[in-house]
Length: 240
Image (cartoon, rainbow, N blue to C red; front, top):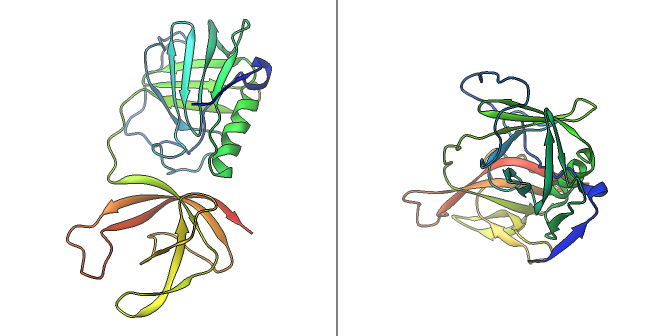
């Protein structure tokens, strides 16, 4: 693992980013201010400023925040972050009192990297803390808020993948000659043919995409069919 040391002033707010607003089955019971216990819990990000309702809360691009003693750790949306944190009543700060924040140096699709960078910058400030069991909210001075849920999420069917889709189809043969989508999972890798369509994905010629899909096993696929199907979770980036 490659770890870099980052000045607290640049990335105090490690945050957390991105995927969209959560839907819950019941309303929480408010706690008094931000005084609830927050340590020793895996807090999963479920809502971000400007997030899209219904966006995935797990898999690629998700984030989990944990406080243990005087250290915090953050997993996702792209890199892992760790450092010092302090709490004073209803106020929370990351990387304070000379405690540097360390981050891994992985590269992810541009949209996820932008989410991470934006939140690192936005949260380089004291944050208002509120705990409303089972939720934890962090609010910046401008009113932007990030909400976390301590409950375990129900396991989703299949697995999530980040896939790049080319702007041109290529000839392929299934039951009959046709044109297939071209996909790859790593930048610069050779394009591979994807037989069939991606459910919920409105592909347009000439546009390249980075998307998040859920890969689900197909029970008893036909002889000429795929053993998996892809269902669109989110369009992360498109160009032009």
